[in-house]
Length: 357
Image 1 (cartoon, rainbow, N blue to C red):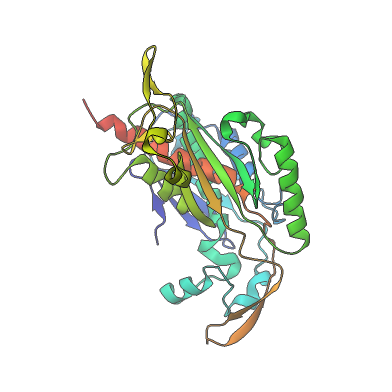
Image 2 (image 1 turned 90 degrees about the vertical axis):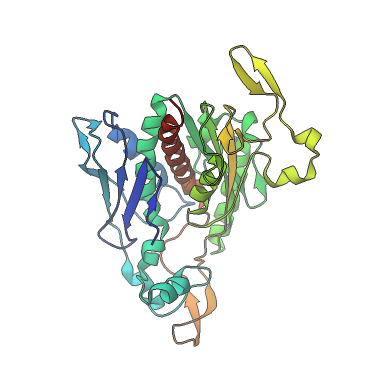
Protein backbone atom coordinates (compact mmCIF):
# COMPACT_ATOMS: atom_id res chain seq x y z
CA UNK A 1 0.00 0.00 0.00
CA UNK A 2 1.08 3.59 -0.62
CA UNK A 3 1.05 4.72 3.00
CA UNK A 4 3.82 7.33 2.77
CA UNK A 5 3.87 10.83 1.30
CA UNK A 6 6.61 13.42 0.80
CA UNK A 7 10.37 13.36 0.30
CA UNK A 8 12.19 15.40 2.97
CA UNK A 9 9.20 16.29 5.12
CA UNK A 10 7.51 12.90 4.83
CA UNK A 11 4.66 11.14 6.58
CA UNK A 12 3.50 7.55 6.97
CA UNK A 13 -0.02 6.97 8.29
CA UNK A 14 -1.36 3.80 9.90
CA UNK A 15 -4.54 2.36 11.35
CA UNK A 16 -8.07 1.49 10.27
CA UNK A 17 -11.51 3.01 10.78
CA UNK A 18 -12.55 0.43 13.39
CA UNK A 19 -9.12 -0.57 14.69
CA UNK A 20 -7.66 0.44 18.04
CA UNK A 21 -6.19 3.68 16.73
CA UNK A 22 -4.98 5.65 13.76
CA UNK A 23 -1.77 7.62 13.62
CA UNK A 24 1.09 9.13 11.68
CA UNK A 25 4.88 9.18 11.74
CA UNK A 26 6.43 12.43 10.54
CA UNK A 27 10.03 12.13 9.38
CA UNK A 28 12.25 15.02 8.37
CA UNK A 29 10.78 17.72 10.57
CA UNK A 30 13.68 20.02 11.47
CA UNK A 31 14.73 20.12 15.12
CA UNK A 32 13.77 23.11 17.22
CA UNK A 33 10.27 23.66 15.84
CA UNK A 34 7.83 24.56 18.62
CA UNK A 35 5.07 21.94 18.53
CA UNK A 36 1.90 23.67 19.68
CA UNK A 37 -0.29 20.70 20.59
CA UNK A 38 -3.29 22.93 21.24
CA UNK A 39 -3.08 24.05 17.62
CA UNK A 40 -2.78 20.46 16.38
CA UNK A 41 -5.83 19.58 18.48
CA UNK A 42 -7.79 22.53 17.12
CA UNK A 43 -7.10 21.38 13.56
CA UNK A 44 -8.36 17.89 14.41
CA UNK A 45 -11.50 19.42 15.93
CA UNK A 46 -12.28 21.00 12.55
CA UNK A 47 -12.20 17.57 10.88
CA UNK A 48 -13.74 15.38 13.59
CA UNK A 49 -17.19 13.80 13.14
CA UNK A 50 -20.34 14.78 15.00
CA UNK A 51 -19.72 18.54 14.86
CA UNK A 52 -23.06 19.56 13.30
CA UNK A 53 -26.34 18.25 11.90
CA UNK A 54 -24.86 18.11 8.38
CA UNK A 55 -22.00 15.76 9.29
CA UNK A 56 -21.79 12.14 10.40
CA UNK A 57 -22.91 11.62 14.00
CA UNK A 58 -20.05 9.28 14.91
CA UNK A 59 -18.65 10.66 18.18
CA UNK A 60 -14.86 10.80 18.26
CA UNK A 61 -12.90 13.28 20.37
CA UNK A 62 -9.83 12.71 18.20
CA UNK A 63 -7.46 13.43 21.06
CA UNK A 64 -3.88 13.31 19.80
CA UNK A 65 -1.02 11.80 21.78
CA UNK A 66 2.68 12.38 21.08
CA UNK A 67 4.74 9.20 21.34
CA UNK A 68 8.12 10.47 20.16
CA UNK A 69 10.07 13.24 18.47
CA UNK A 70 9.05 16.08 20.81
CA UNK A 71 10.87 17.13 23.98
CA UNK A 72 10.13 20.17 26.11
CA UNK A 73 7.66 21.37 23.50
CA UNK A 74 10.05 21.30 20.55
CA UNK A 75 10.84 18.84 17.76
CA UNK A 76 14.08 16.93 18.32
CA UNK A 77 14.77 16.01 14.70
CA UNK A 78 13.75 12.42 15.39
CA UNK A 79 10.57 10.97 13.84
CA UNK A 80 7.45 12.46 15.41
CA UNK A 81 4.85 9.79 16.17
CA UNK A 82 1.25 10.92 16.75
CA UNK A 83 -1.59 8.57 17.63
CA UNK A 84 -5.37 9.04 17.88
CA UNK A 85 -7.40 6.34 19.57
CA UNK A 86 -10.71 5.22 18.06
CA UNK A 87 -13.50 5.36 20.63
CA UNK A 88 -16.90 5.12 18.91
CA UNK A 89 -16.72 2.11 16.61
CA UNK A 90 -19.94 0.30 15.74
CA UNK A 91 -18.58 -2.61 13.75
CA UNK A 92 -21.96 -4.38 13.81
CA UNK A 93 -23.24 -1.67 11.44
CA UNK A 94 -21.09 -3.27 8.74
CA UNK A 95 -21.67 -7.01 9.29
CA UNK A 96 -24.20 -7.03 6.44
CA UNK A 97 -21.44 -6.18 3.91
CA UNK A 98 -18.87 -8.71 5.10
CA UNK A 99 -19.34 -10.56 1.79
CA UNK A 100 -21.13 -7.93 -0.30
CA UNK A 101 -19.78 -4.96 -2.23
CA UNK A 102 -21.19 -1.48 -1.66
CA UNK A 103 -21.66 0.51 -4.89
CA UNK A 104 -18.85 3.02 -5.60
CA UNK A 105 -16.82 1.94 -2.55
CA UNK A 106 -13.42 0.27 -2.40
CA UNK A 107 -14.91 -3.04 -1.20
CA UNK A 108 -14.61 -4.87 -4.53
CA UNK A 109 -11.22 -3.48 -5.58
CA UNK A 110 -9.64 -4.13 -2.16
CA UNK A 111 -11.04 -7.66 -2.14
CA UNK A 112 -9.61 -8.43 -5.58
CA UNK A 113 -6.23 -6.81 -4.91
CA UNK A 114 -5.55 -8.23 -1.44
CA UNK A 115 -7.86 -11.24 -1.21
CA UNK A 116 -8.81 -10.10 2.28
CA UNK A 117 -10.35 -6.84 3.52
CA UNK A 118 -11.47 -5.14 6.68
CA UNK A 119 -15.12 -4.44 5.94
CA UNK A 120 -15.70 -2.49 9.18
CA UNK A 121 -16.28 1.03 7.92
CA UNK A 122 -14.00 0.40 4.96
CA UNK A 123 -10.95 -0.34 7.11
CA UNK A 124 -7.92 1.40 5.64
CA UNK A 125 -9.94 2.95 2.80
CA UNK A 126 -12.11 4.90 5.25
CA UNK A 127 -11.90 8.69 5.42
CA UNK A 128 -11.22 8.13 9.13
CA UNK A 129 -7.55 7.79 8.09
CA UNK A 130 -7.47 11.45 7.10
CA UNK A 131 -7.42 12.49 10.76
CA UNK A 132 -3.79 11.35 10.78
CA UNK A 133 -3.08 13.55 7.77
CA UNK A 134 -4.68 16.55 9.48
CA UNK A 135 -2.47 16.01 12.55
CA UNK A 136 0.64 15.87 10.36
CA UNK A 137 -0.57 18.84 8.33
CA UNK A 138 -0.92 20.86 11.52
CA UNK A 139 2.78 20.30 12.24
CA UNK A 140 3.57 21.33 8.65
CA UNK A 141 1.49 24.49 9.18
CA UNK A 142 3.58 25.32 12.26
CA UNK A 143 6.69 25.07 10.09
CA UNK A 144 5.16 27.24 7.35
CA UNK A 145 4.03 29.81 9.91
CA UNK A 146 7.69 30.58 10.62
CA UNK A 147 8.13 31.40 6.94
CA UNK A 148 5.00 33.59 6.90
CA UNK A 149 3.15 31.22 4.55
CA UNK A 150 -0.62 30.93 4.94
CA UNK A 151 -2.68 27.94 3.79
CA UNK A 152 -6.46 28.33 3.71
CA UNK A 153 -9.35 26.42 2.21
CA UNK A 154 -13.11 26.85 2.16
CA UNK A 155 -16.25 25.30 0.66
CA UNK A 156 -16.82 27.05 -2.65
CA UNK A 157 -19.61 24.86 -4.03
CA UNK A 158 -22.28 22.39 -2.91
CA UNK A 159 -24.32 20.88 -5.72
CA UNK A 160 -25.07 23.79 -8.05
CA UNK A 161 -24.69 26.47 -5.35
CA UNK A 162 -21.44 28.40 -5.83
CA UNK A 163 -19.66 30.98 -3.67
CA UNK A 164 -18.03 34.12 -5.11
CA UNK A 165 -14.36 34.14 -6.14
CA UNK A 166 -11.95 33.94 -3.22
CA UNK A 167 -10.65 37.47 -3.84
CA UNK A 168 -14.13 38.78 -3.00
CA UNK A 169 -14.32 36.82 0.26
CA UNK A 170 -12.98 37.28 3.77
CA UNK A 171 -11.36 33.89 4.35
CA UNK A 172 -11.24 34.70 8.05
CA UNK A 173 -14.99 34.01 8.09
CA UNK A 174 -14.66 30.41 6.90
CA UNK A 175 -15.17 28.96 10.38
CA UNK A 176 -18.18 31.18 11.12
CA UNK A 177 -20.71 28.58 9.94
CA UNK A 178 -21.07 24.79 9.84
CA UNK A 179 -20.57 24.44 6.09
CA UNK A 180 -17.29 26.45 6.11
CA UNK A 181 -18.23 28.85 3.34
CA UNK A 182 -17.01 32.40 4.10
CA UNK A 183 -19.96 34.00 2.29
CA UNK A 184 -22.90 34.01 4.78
CA UNK A 185 -25.70 34.17 2.21
CA UNK A 186 -24.24 31.33 0.14
CA UNK A 187 -23.55 29.33 3.30
CA UNK A 188 -27.22 29.46 4.31
CA UNK A 189 -28.30 28.09 0.94
CA UNK A 190 -25.66 25.35 1.09
CA UNK A 191 -26.72 24.27 4.58
CA UNK A 192 -30.38 24.14 3.54
CA UNK A 193 -29.52 21.99 0.51
CA UNK A 194 -27.36 19.54 2.50
CA UNK A 195 -30.04 19.22 5.18
CA UNK A 196 -32.71 18.58 2.55
CA UNK A 197 -30.56 15.89 0.93
CA UNK A 198 -29.91 14.34 4.36
CA UNK A 199 -33.62 14.11 5.14
CA UNK A 200 -34.13 12.38 1.78
CA UNK A 201 -31.52 9.79 2.87
CA UNK A 202 -29.23 10.78 0.02
CA UNK A 203 -25.90 12.58 -0.45
CA UNK A 204 -24.47 15.40 -2.56
CA UNK A 205 -21.04 16.50 -3.76
CA UNK A 206 -19.21 19.80 -3.70
CA UNK A 207 -16.01 21.76 -4.17
CA UNK A 208 -13.27 22.95 -1.83
CA UNK A 209 -11.05 25.83 -2.92
CA UNK A 210 -7.52 26.10 -1.54
CA UNK A 211 -5.51 29.31 -1.37
CA UNK A 212 -1.81 29.47 -0.46
CA UNK A 213 -0.50 32.99 0.16
CA UNK A 214 2.88 34.63 0.80
CA UNK A 215 4.79 31.82 -0.91
CA UNK A 216 8.38 32.60 -1.84
CA UNK A 217 9.32 32.37 -5.49
CA UNK A 218 11.14 29.17 -6.47
CA UNK A 219 9.25 26.30 -4.82
CA UNK A 220 8.77 23.29 -7.07
CA UNK A 221 10.83 21.28 -9.53
CA UNK A 222 10.75 21.88 -13.30
CA UNK A 223 10.15 18.39 -14.71
CA UNK A 224 8.39 15.53 -12.91
CA UNK A 225 7.97 17.19 -9.52
CA UNK A 226 6.20 20.37 -10.58
CA UNK A 227 4.51 22.17 -7.71
CA UNK A 228 1.07 21.85 -9.25
CA UNK A 229 1.68 18.16 -9.97
CA UNK A 230 2.55 17.57 -6.33
CA UNK A 231 -0.55 19.45 -5.20
CA UNK A 232 -2.66 17.42 -7.62
CA UNK A 233 -1.13 14.20 -6.30
CA UNK A 234 -1.89 15.29 -2.74
CA UNK A 235 -5.50 16.29 -3.44
CA UNK A 236 -6.36 13.30 -5.63
CA UNK A 237 -5.17 11.06 -2.81
CA UNK A 238 -7.97 12.33 -0.54
CA UNK A 239 -11.04 10.11 -0.23
CA UNK A 240 -13.94 10.97 -2.59
CA UNK A 241 -11.93 13.43 -4.72
CA UNK A 242 -12.82 13.31 -8.41
CA UNK A 243 -11.00 16.31 -9.83
CA UNK A 244 -8.28 18.94 -9.35
CA UNK A 245 -7.57 22.18 -11.17
CA UNK A 246 -5.34 25.15 -10.41
CA UNK A 247 -5.20 28.68 -11.73
CA UNK A 248 -7.54 29.16 -14.70
CA UNK A 249 -7.99 25.38 -14.80
CA UNK A 250 -10.42 24.00 -17.34
CA UNK A 251 -11.92 27.46 -17.93
CA UNK A 252 -8.60 28.43 -19.51
CA UNK A 253 -9.34 26.41 -22.65
CA UNK A 254 -11.85 29.06 -23.76
CA UNK A 255 -9.33 31.93 -23.57
CA UNK A 256 -6.88 33.18 -26.19
CA UNK A 257 -3.20 33.30 -25.34
CA UNK A 258 -3.35 37.10 -25.40
CA UNK A 259 -6.08 36.93 -22.74
CA UNK A 260 -4.51 34.19 -20.65
CA UNK A 261 -0.90 35.37 -20.39
CA UNK A 262 0.06 36.96 -17.06
CA UNK A 263 2.02 40.16 -17.80
CA UNK A 264 4.95 40.94 -15.50
CA UNK A 265 5.52 44.30 -13.85
CA UNK A 266 7.95 45.71 -11.31
CA UNK A 267 6.31 46.32 -7.92
CA UNK A 268 9.03 48.05 -5.95
CA UNK A 269 11.46 45.37 -4.81
CA UNK A 270 9.65 42.41 -6.41
CA UNK A 271 8.42 41.30 -9.81
CA UNK A 272 4.72 40.47 -9.94
CA UNK A 273 2.05 39.60 -12.51
CA UNK A 274 -0.95 41.80 -13.29
CA UNK A 275 -3.26 38.79 -13.62
CA UNK A 276 -2.91 35.31 -12.13
CA UNK A 277 -4.31 32.80 -14.60
CA UNK A 278 -1.16 30.76 -13.83
CA UNK A 279 -2.38 30.20 -10.29
CA UNK A 280 0.94 31.29 -8.83
CA UNK A 281 2.88 28.55 -10.65
CA UNK A 282 4.87 28.82 -13.87
CA UNK A 283 7.03 26.03 -15.24
CA UNK A 284 6.09 24.01 -12.18
CA UNK A 285 7.69 26.60 -9.87
CA UNK A 286 6.00 29.17 -7.62
CA UNK A 287 6.24 32.75 -8.89
CA UNK A 288 5.29 34.52 -5.64
CA UNK A 289 1.60 35.10 -6.47
CA UNK A 290 -1.25 33.34 -4.69
CA UNK A 291 -1.49 29.63 -5.47
CA UNK A 292 -5.17 28.75 -5.77
CA UNK A 293 -6.87 25.52 -6.76
CA UNK A 294 -10.18 23.67 -6.71
CA UNK A 295 -10.81 20.14 -5.46
CA UNK A 296 -14.00 18.36 -6.55
CA UNK A 297 -15.62 15.84 -4.20
CA UNK A 298 -18.19 13.30 -5.32
CA UNK A 299 -21.41 12.57 -3.37
CA UNK A 300 -20.65 10.26 -0.44
CA UNK A 301 -21.07 6.70 -1.71
CA UNK A 302 -22.96 5.38 1.32
CA UNK A 303 -26.61 6.39 1.05
CA UNK A 304 -29.37 5.35 3.43
CA UNK A 305 -31.24 3.55 0.65
CA UNK A 306 -31.33 0.01 -0.73
CA UNK A 307 -29.02 -0.48 -3.72
CA UNK A 308 -28.51 -3.40 -6.10
CA UNK A 309 -25.09 -5.03 -5.98
CA UNK A 310 -23.32 -8.42 -5.94
CA UNK A 311 -21.49 -10.45 -3.31
CA UNK A 312 -18.15 -12.25 -3.39
CA UNK A 313 -19.78 -15.23 -5.13
CA UNK A 314 -21.09 -12.95 -7.88
CA UNK A 315 -24.69 -13.36 -6.75
CA UNK A 316 -27.05 -10.42 -7.00
CA UNK A 317 -27.87 -8.90 -3.62
CA UNK A 318 -29.43 -5.77 -2.15
CA UNK A 319 -27.15 -3.63 0.00
CA UNK A 320 -28.84 -1.52 2.66
CA UNK A 321 -27.26 1.70 3.85
CA UNK A 322 -26.39 1.56 7.54
CA UNK A 323 -24.03 3.31 9.91
CA UNK A 324 -23.26 7.01 10.36
CA UNK A 325 -22.15 8.96 7.33
CA UNK A 326 -21.85 12.50 5.99
CA UNK A 327 -24.61 13.68 3.62
CA UNK A 328 -21.93 15.94 2.10
CA UNK A 329 -18.22 15.52 2.74
CA UNK A 330 -16.95 19.00 1.88
CA UNK A 331 -17.44 20.80 5.24
CA UNK A 332 -15.13 18.31 6.98
CA UNK A 333 -12.83 18.11 3.94
CA UNK A 334 -11.67 21.73 4.32
CA UNK A 335 -9.00 20.99 6.99
CA UNK A 336 -7.93 17.88 5.04
CA UNK A 337 -7.29 19.94 1.90
CA UNK A 338 -5.36 22.48 3.98
CA UNK A 339 -3.31 19.72 5.62
CA UNK A 340 -2.30 18.08 2.34
CA UNK A 341 -1.40 21.46 0.82
CA UNK A 342 0.70 22.33 3.88
CA UNK A 343 2.53 19.01 3.65
CA UNK A 344 3.39 19.67 0.00
CA UNK A 345 4.63 23.20 0.67
CA UNK A 346 6.63 22.16 3.75
CA UNK A 347 8.34 19.47 1.71
CA UNK A 348 9.20 21.85 -1.15
CA UNK A 349 10.32 24.54 1.29
CA UNK A 350 12.98 22.15 2.61
CA UNK A 351 13.82 20.79 -0.86
CA UNK A 352 14.43 24.23 -2.34
CA UNK A 353 17.19 24.88 0.22
CA UNK A 354 19.29 22.34 -1.69
CA UNK A 355 18.69 23.94 -5.13
CA UNK A 356 21.65 26.34 -5.14
CA UNK A 357 24.65 27.46 -3.10
